[in-house]
Amino acid sequence: MNNLTKMKIAAAASDVFEAFVDTEKMSHFWFSSGSGRWTEGETVTLRYEEYNAQVDIKVVEIQENKKIVYAWGDTTVTITMEEVDPAVTIIAVNEDGFNEKDDDLLSKMIDNKEGWVYMLTCLKGYLEYGVSLRAALVK
Image (cartoon, rainbow, N blue to C red; front, top):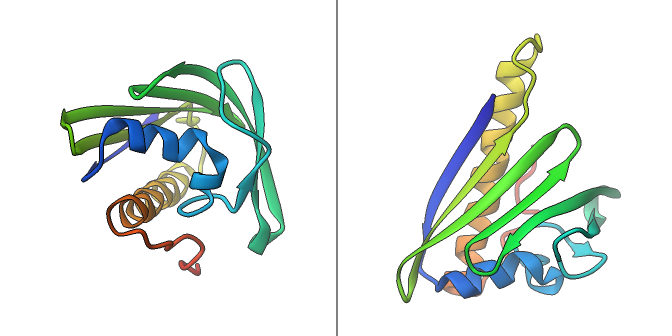
């Protein structure tokens, strides 16, 4: 069972890619900090300072400016970047590995979709307008 979310970003694929793998840039739209640059085979610790939370991700695959795959918990996330022209990229986030027999599957999938839409909206704000919207959403 997977959850796919896509968005068009007015930025080059290289800028979108760097926004994820460079934790300083990532801190403007997603997690507040990270233990280092995302590289294939590495484990990176990502932190949400405002929630006193952190998560470790295992970076499984990197294709520069095209694809990032990482595992966290029981799921795997694949982020793809398709540059449709030099200043426009379609980014797709596909999270796979949800348990179809989970009684709470529907609420988990809705929560997951909301999270990815919010993160991609924050990415769009950061790359297109230079604003940081991360941590603005309160649930």
